[in-house]
Length: 209
Ligand SMILES: [Zn+2]
Image 1 (tube, helix red, strand yellow):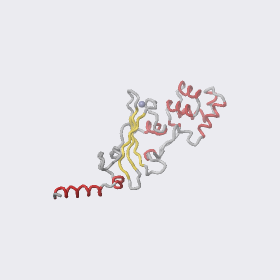
Image 2: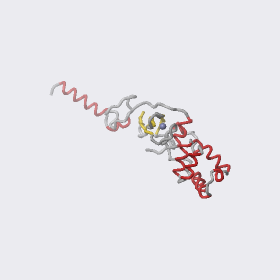
Image 3: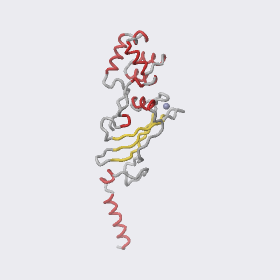
Image 4: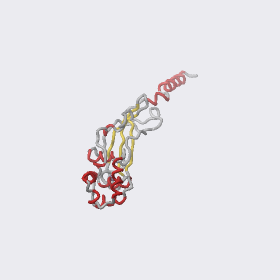
């Protein structure tokens, strides 16, 4: 065996020891790098960042919709991309989730940082955010009605332009039944929907993947 071959063998064996499966599991690669050695699952590795629309007025309702409904056009056609920034020894990952509306001409985009190690709220930027229908625009309220089987009400929400704020004002003033000409049955259905533990949310959020 030539000296050269012996050398290269040594080199490759050293490589195996340095980058064993366990090590590659817990090692965070340099920012922006995508290599088999660092990441056998070929994730996209990038440092945590904030992109697109970062205004609370749009991000709070988007978050409250369970990341489903574009706050600009109201359509539910939002793509999600994930970029991992790092992984800890216990397996918790952290990174950035980017969302982009696919509606033609809308182009709305935002991002949320996440950390699987944060209990109850992996999207930690939203930890202190208010939750509930109070912050829903009309398009969201229509979905809320749909979700709770309130189809007549959905029509009224649309035709009378009732957002989450207006909806709750009507409801709490006791004027809802008369103002919207609803049956007692519908009103009690609204009450039930609002009282559900997650009744104010369109979909549950903060699910651990
Ligand atoms: Zn949109």
